[in-house]
Image (cartoon, rainbow, N blue to C red; front, side):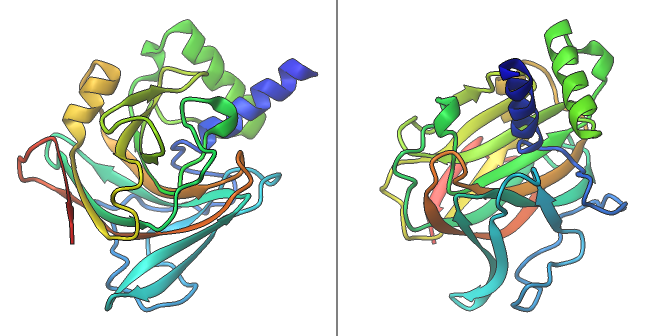
Length: 259
């Protein structure tokens, strides 16, 4: 029974790290770009392309709402011992659009969170990018894990997932491995308390990040998601997400500046 529970928890973790679809999501057409939050009115209705991302019916869902923040519409996430996200199916060639740009704001850290520890793996903000690829090229351990996820959930995991997080302790640029599969990697885009309470502008070269994390070139981008989760630590927290954009311009691997 303990082994079954372990596999089930691993599956939930994997689904929480970048699946492009979940059983609750209707069929959608992948879009070539991410629909903005700023061009949509405040309220509970999500912009076209964005959908609720339920990780498990056994987990409480984080609440997401479009609100006005400093004159623009953004997403406010409120997590209370919860874990869920918003997801947006995509069809983007990262070689054509290698630059990922977004804004986020965190007012408080999750005191106990530590993404290097399985039982404390929470983050006030996560930006999750899913990639396609040839599943037949995966090694035996990863194929077995993917098969277990598919059997337990009925869903196929993406070939690879990059997750940008705000960490308490691990320094920026740290790559954190998933304990169950080599196909999920967390990159620390921000760390510590210095930039709390202020909007942060983050720019990443997603091709370079993928190569550093996985040791290969990325396939097509199939989805992007946001997630604020406190299900492991049981904390209450809120955070904000601004627009997410893929760009062609070649720029430095990462910059982070204050608005």
